[in-house]
Image (cartoon, rainbow, N blue to C red; front, top):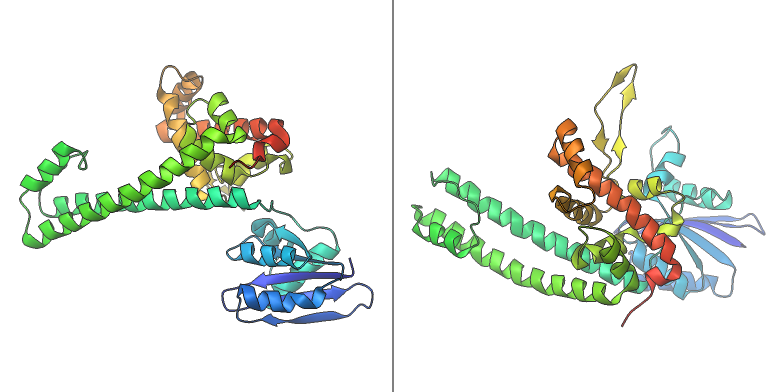
Length: 340
């Protein structure tokens, strides 16, 4: 490559650092504001040149990669956590220019820890799945606000508030005027969020019925339905980039990390470094392990007896991540086939 560079992306500007390998000249600067049109104008200078740029897989990477590809420039997406690790111990203040130079250096030395760049149809399902999870989280949060208001006003706790019986309970509850208003507003918001969630859920399930990779997950993994299959498929990405199922589990953020210092060892914690929507889908798919018909039922019971039910569900979720890795890897290109 004649031009090798790094791009550090922020909302206000994109800092660049690129090297001309033929002349040895290094150019550093900024593209501001950080918009698609400004970046497109800046990239026009590389027309007809053999160039490659790396950027981290953080917020904003999508339009940067798309514009690089549009300009005929090779785009490389760096894995943020591994890229930071390769920076080593901090010796001086971290700056945007230092980050761009670090990416360029890793690229020149062929040490860049790369992430998968998903095709457009995978990004679409991934975005839809994340919106669905966000809507359901908001819906759950408003239910919790109702429960908090009932407790605040001394009303007996009751589950199933959104059922007909639950709504009748709310209607007859002894609440102040302000408390009544809060509950009514919350119910209207919950109903609106529920309607949006139904549309998103239907879209994701319809996609899963037609996509070979999603169908394979549904057919081969107990507990994985059409909804969770579409989210797992989109968030796991091309599993051929993982050298082992351990790396696939690490990608989910369900792996256990342990901190040790001077002989002291803290309890293990989930790394939570992966996509939250993927952890949600895998945990939901692990819940049926408590059923007697589940192939993981015995494992779930043994684990729950030792460490509790929640950790047992997480253990089953990790097993599902490993199996999903092998299923999608085995399908090859068919797993990522675009459907209409």
